Structures are given as C-alpha cells and as structure tokens.
Image (cartoon, rainbow, N blue to C red):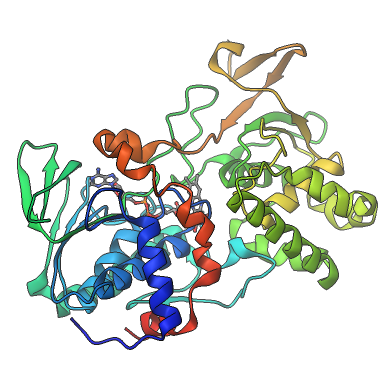
Length: 443
Ligand SMILES: Cc1cc2nc3c(=O)[nH]c(=O)nc-3n(C[C@H](O)[C@H](O)[C@H](O)COP(=O)(O)OP(=O)(O)OC[C@H]3O[C@@H](n4cnc5c(N)ncnc54)[C@H](O)[C@@H]3O)c2cc1C
C-alpha cells in the first residue's frame, strides 16, 4: 500500500471513524453516510475518502481486493482513494452509468460548502483524492467528477473493474473473512477482502399526489408556474427538507435562479445576524447529535421575530405577485433540522413576513381530489378540521425513504443497528484532523 504518515491524533480519529461505520458482526464491511444527517455531495465524498484511508491503515493493509457498491459521488471518491492507495477495486452500480442521479440535471446548483452557510467559503472548490470540481449545476459537477475519475482509472486500469446494471442484493462473509456479493442476476462475485457500501439514500418516492412535478434531480419544470397580479395561481409545496424549501423559493421569488441564492443572503444579513444564525446552526446540530427534538422555528423566532419588519423592504420586491405559495410541513419545528440554514432562513422570512402561507397538517392522497376543467386541473385538498382549499399545483417533496438501506439489504438490518447514530455523533465534517485532509487533498 502507498505509504502515508499520520499523527497519533489522526490515527485515533480514523480508528473511531472506522468503528462508527463498520457493520456489526462483520470484519470489513462499511457503510458511507447512509445514516448521517448532513448529507451533501461534498460531505459524502469526504466521508468516502476518509473511510477508504481509515480501512487501509487500521491495521495497515497491503493491497486489498475490494468491492464498492454504488457508483454515485461517494462510490467514485471511495474507489479513487482506494486505487490511489494501491488496492484493487470492483465497482458495482445498478444503473447503466456513473452518477446516474445527478447527470443531466441542469438547474440544481451544487457547491461544496454552501449548505454550511453562513460558515461557508463561497469561492471554495472541491479537491480530494484526485476528484476535483468547482461549483456549478449538477450535470457539470457530475461531469467534472467523472472526468477526474477517468484520469485516475486510466492510471490504475489493471486494478479497476466496473460492473454496470448490476444490483447487489446481499453480502456474505466466509469463515476466512472474505466477502461474496449476491446480485439480482443469480450469479455471485467472491473473494473480496472488504466491502464498501456507497449506496446513498435512494431515489425520492414516486409522487402519488398532485401534479406530475418532476423529481428533485430531474430538471424542474417549476418556472412555468405563474398567473397574473390580479389572479395569482395558488401552489401548495409540501415537505420541509431542502427539496421542499427550494421549491418554495423557486415558486415564490421572481426570476428564481438556484445559483444566485447565495448572493441574495449576504445582501440582506449583517455580520452580526450571520454570526447568530451560525450559532443557532451549531445548537441545532448539537441537538440532533444528542438525540434531542429541536424546534427550528422556535429558535429563529426567539432570535429574529422582533426584527422582521426591518428586513421586509429588502424582501418584498423579490417576491412574485403572480404566485401564491402555501408551504406545508408537519415537522415540529416547521423546518427539518437537517436542511440547510440558507434555505431555511429565507423561507422563514417569507413566512413571518406573510409573503407565503403555511399549513401544518399532513398531506395524504386520501384528502386530495382533482377537478378537471377545459384547460387545466385543479387540486382540492380537504384539510382535516380546516375545510377545503383549491390549488392549481401541488408539489410534493417528501424526500427519500429513511429506511433505504434496511429495505435494500434486509438481512443486514441487525448489523446496522450498532452504528446507527454513531457517525452523526462524530460530526465528521467538523472533526477531521488537518493532516488527514492534507493527505487526501494531495493524494
Ligand atoms: C431531494 C434531495 C435534494 C438534495 N439536494 C442536494 C444539494 O442541493 N446539494 C448537495 O450537495 N446534496 C444534495 N442532496 C444530497 C445528495 O443527493 C446526496 O448527498 C448525494 O447524491 C449522495 O451521493 P452518494 O454517492 O452517497 O449516494 P447516491 O447519489 O444516492 O448514489 C448511490 C448510488 O448507488 C447505486 N445503488 C444503490 N443501491 C444499489 C445496489 N443495491 N446495488 C448497486 N448499486 C446501488 C445508485 O444507483 C446510485 O448510483 C440532496 C438529496 C435529496 C434526496
């Protein structure tokens, strides 16, 4: 294996990280980020690279023959790091290409640190284990990542083998501590020294209610939604994670462009306010890591409610008068604590300035009916205890299944219970020692 020098602190960190992601009862099978709460492309890539390094040095491994399951951003970073450290990699992807979820998405802006706003470096690029990308729309970021990986693959071609259109359904550990992968094609792959699950969080569940609004990573068709000043269209956006919050902003703001959201916030908030938002963010993250139920809106109200009127003059001109947005969430604190502070605070302001409406009741298929007119369809929602409301569009962003890993690998359910909750406590994105980051950047 390629030689790496690490401080005692770094070695200690890698040992705890490995423990927090290793499947219980198995010697060398690891999961990247499927149970963590801060899920962005950059954090998943970082987790994958750190894990590949940790598995290589704890204890030091000569060349291993490893399986990487999943060819998204995390799988690519995992494979790149392992190849650079001298291991042989077989990568299994159920779709017919790498990064199948984000390739061809042209209107979602990806940034390595924007979801850490206000503690973010707006000029940051991502660089780790030879995978480099600069902020841009999802398709461009995916292509930069694949190009970086192509260069690594061609250098280590003898040690890399991809398998596309291949779903892994289970793994087995032999008495010799080797792994066999069971596929959906009735054949198996065996003889692996280690297995890395980089299967992510799955796809969003099919939208059963409302419009045929496309999934988050499919290029959205929300820009066509508008009425007139005299007769604005009423749009219901259901879901309190980043998908829902971004759809609220997309519909509520004039000339919305995902890429300029980060320019909007610095114009509105003073340094002092940003510091307070950052402090609240830490309290929220620590609360989640400690298993606490955090109410985001209560924290924002305590800090900012009295200042709302002062901000209104900045905000009002940005809001479209042709759309009337109703935000729907059943989260205790209105916003999902795992969502990005930037998205949350902007929607919070819209809410408290009465520029959008809110319904805190569960949206289910059985309370929605359709009324078909000559040129459009209206959706009638019969809110329990509140009566009927008519919406031109319903956008459902209820996210991915929280049980994606268990549902994909039912036999591993017992093996994941010891690690659920462990890696969030480690707060990897804040705790990685500098020498580890340096090694991975220079690898
Ligand atoms: C609605 C939504 C909005 C988001 N917005 C952002 C955003 O704006 N910015 C951001 O940085 N992040 C965002 N994220 C998070 C981001 O999508 C994920 O962090 C990123 O996709 C994770 O990469 P990954 O490689 O870990 O997993 P994935 O991208 O999910 O990749 C996993 C891969 O594994 C494959 N796979 C799964 N199971 C198997 C199996 N059994 N066998 C073989 N292959 C398998 C899949 O086909 C897939 O290619 C968002 C997520 C969601 C759901």
